[in-house]
Structure formats: structure tokens, C-alpha cells
Amino acid sequence: MSLEEIKRFQLFPQIPTIADFQILAEESLHTLPELFRDQLKGVAVIVEESPTIETLQGLGLTSPFQLMGLYHGIPIPKQHHGMLWSDHPRIFLYYLPIIRYWQQEKPFLSLAQIIHHVLIHEIGHHFGYSDADMDKIDQEIS
Image (cartoon, rainbow, N blue to C red):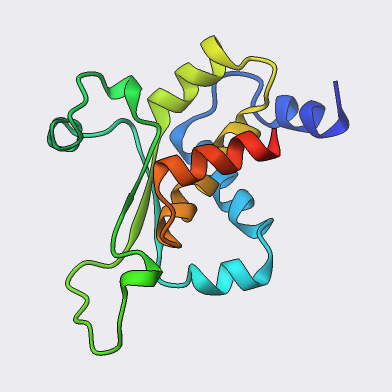
């Protein structure tokens, strides 16, 4: 077990609360290079227990466990000057699906690593990348 994992275990000896989860998401954001953090100003990162039924239906999903994160907004490449922002961009991280994934699918990864991965995926959408683009990048990195 690495020193980081030991620290995490000491911080969260049991399943972390949503507040703990939010702290991990904020820590993840702070690890990003300044160039990326600058591009994320005004993008809210919101932790919710699980996606709403309306969100799931809108995406054609049947289970809340099928969705760990969601970007809601206009990607940077499609933004233009003079746009009216009726809806600021948001990244949703869904607590229950991520916790379940961590416990059942990827117990060898820390929760912080999974949150970081989901957050990076959603940030990719803010920069205009599709799910296919993000999957290709994941494969190239792995």
C-alpha cells in the first residue's frame, strides 16, 4: 500500500460521505495544470447522490449506476463572444455510482483515482471531446 493510500484510508476508514467525496473532487481539480484550471473558471463541480430520472431518460439509460459523471454546458469550441449564459457549465459527479464502481469493479484503485478519472472525462467534454475521443485517449494512456 502506498503512502497516499494509507493517508486516504486514515482519512476515510469507512465509506466516505458526500462531503468527503466533494473534498476529493476539489483536491483532484487542484492537481490540474494551471492552464486547465484557468479554462475551468466558472464551471461548477457538483456532487450529487445519483443522477435524476429525467437525466437518465434523456440519455436513454435505465439505471443510475450507468452514469458516474455528466458535463452540462456548451463546450469551449462551440462558445462564441456575445453568447448569453442562461446556464453556466456544470460537471456532475454521482456519488453512489462511483462508490459502487470503486467497491465492485475497481477495488485496486483508490477512490481518489476514480474520481479524478471521471472528472477528467467530464472536463474533456468541456473542451469539446466526445465520449469516443475520451475512450481513445484512455486507451492510449493505458
